Length: 310
Image (cartoon, rainbow, N blue to C red):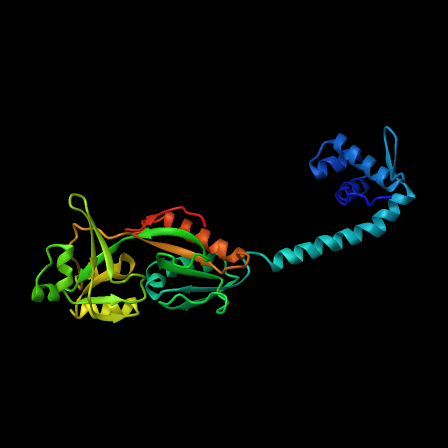
């Protein structure tokens, strides 16, 4: 004898407790015919009669009493166990370890995390702040937010949005050395190199009428921190490129200004990175979706939302 379909036991319990096929159909939100067919299938699989049917009565047999008394508690225990497991792995409960740059945290991620924790108070967040891309496996990082262009082809990533990049300098520096009149003229200026960028000394400028120009800079000094670059530029120590998220406040306050604004630089991307070789945690997917929804409902500054997969 093959084991019966466990789903039929739910129908059996409804008929046993309701005392009729009609009552069971109302409880299950199913047709009376489908309930009758389910009971017949269960009786056939068990090779016993569970209910004696008349035009006016559905009466449980001794086998029905035994099945209800012995099997239903086991079924209830199974349901309770499954609910407990689902609760344990509930995507709204647990710890999420995140990595991001301080600028991205301040300007884009922090307000998202504040709203996220209000929505999901049982989620604990561990936020690691660094300009350097960390080893997600060694650091046990679930989700990393990175700006720029991905260099590691093994990374699993979702592109969240684009951002602009600006050539900037302090007004006092430009007053002292003069304003460059072309991308090629930048080679005569004190260039501050952000060394964490790939190809950080080679920049492509585009103009609607004059086309593209590729310029190889000669560094005056270098730094491995976006915050450090901002600080050096504000002190009038040179000229460089910054992403719009990092420089928006300095531009608004007049501490820095755009240089050659008629020339544009390639856009960069904001990526959510998942650890290689692991399943994406439900919490990571939840936060990525929440991030997109949060900024789609608001004016995202100059960032251009995009929808890109892995």
